[in-house]
Image 1 (cartoon, rainbow, N blue to C red):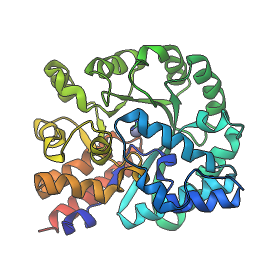
Image 2: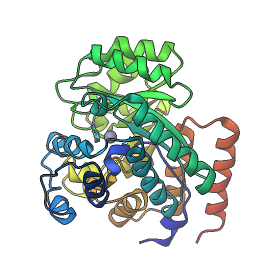
Image 3: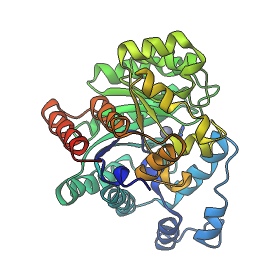
Image 4: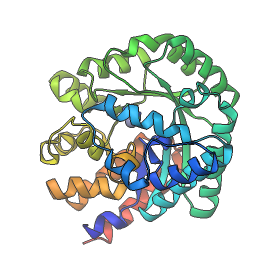
Length: 335
Ligand code: ADE
Ligand code: ZN
């Protein structure tokens, strides 16, 4: 791996905490919670991680989340991810969780958020990693269910900074969630949405215009609409791109065909993120390395990717300034 990737301070903005559940921890939790898994070993489970598209991944991902039951499980899951962040020099992370994946199977919202939040607080104190938490609505469920979830989110607004929209994009366009996003925004929450991953470029424009999002998660299909790309450049609307995820879910056949670097060079505010690293073959450094292998990133390009993420984050301005200085320091001291 390019050693400059290792030392570059990084900010992650697109990470599903349930997607960090490594097979080994899944087995440990299943044993602890007396749950039977349909695989005989972590290796057998890992071998099943061959996906044709987003839905084939989501089916396994929701099944995997069944191993998470207690507040300690959510703590352990989040703590394991934070240790990976420390290894990869991630200085700030804004993580997603999917409340309905857990509440729909009888796990209390409080159990989930309290476990995740406690680990992130420990991570901030012990590892120096700052954080934000974003609750995602599952778009294959109804807006009514999203409204119920929003009620719980608002009871934990001291811990949750925003809401997002994930799960099956095709057939579940942004307008399905317009009212619940309006209410979230009116309540002071940030909004983000997955769009233009498997769904059309129109979903990106609609998420911006109808859901008033601050960032687009994925957004790689924007290139199908040149006017939209121009608008993304003008407005500096951030895209949280996930290169290894896009390869695993066959959004692109080869990394050399990925549009991330073209978009970066055009001035789109793209960032690199890991999405569901336990399923897609790597955390932040692995994602940067995969792009670097295909495109040979220069140090200014690497720095720009981190600066884009700092600018796109929901960090307060004084902290953003400190983080920008870290990138400048890295650039000044890296050959
Ligand atoms: N949930 C977890 N990962 C996702 C992705 N890449 N797209 C949509 N929903 C998701
Ligand atoms: Zn995602």
